[in-house]
Amino acid sequence: MAGSEDLIKRVGRTSLTQEVVNQMAELIMKGAWKPGDQIPSEKELAARFGVGRSTIREALQSLVVIGVLDTRYGGGTFVQEPTSQLLSGAFRWGLLLSHRNLSDLTEVRLNVEVECTGLAAERRDEKDLENLMITFEHMKTYQEDEARFMEYDNLFHRQMAESSKNLIYVNLVSTIQSIVRLWYPSTFSISETKASTLEEHRLIVEAIRSGNINEARMFMRHHIMSAAERLNQVLVNREISSD
Image (tube, rainbow, N blue to C red; front, side, top):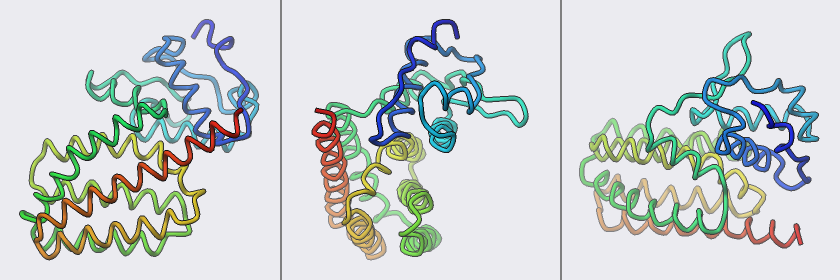
């Protein structure tokens, strides 16, 4: 933990949680926070970053969700030991949002999730379809609740992967969605995000339900490309606002 104080900078007002997540990831990558280290308290981190404790809490929760940090009841928050080189590398890479990383992530999603959706259309059973439909209905119900909407969005993609009946795809999509979970909340500031996302998911689930492999792939490709464009718009706006 030595020297981490010098690496922490006060953050600006744009996307505070994402900025804090980015800086925390950098502390881990630079070795200022090592596996097994207990990180400072919420109160101390809020003072160092110059943000409210709620922002720190959200950032910590994001890192806990993907397994980078571990919160122990009554005992503080600790840097996790990586469970595997693949996941550790993916998480560290995915935490640092940039145009290059967005392009890389989009390419991987197109190669993994498009094919996976085609398999889901071919192999899904009635229980798979029921789960997808329920999750999609939850997305519609909670479209005004950013956290719940994103939770069910991520779940939809994981259930789609489960419908492919290929456990490797399930693991790959779960890793991808852990990265997506960190990045895509930024796009909710775009007015059309929720309506577009819902329509894109509706088309995907309808193609899977009808067993149309080509349409399932086509609609997933359209969704991934559209989601990437929305996130790219956020990146462009951030660059403009920081100039």
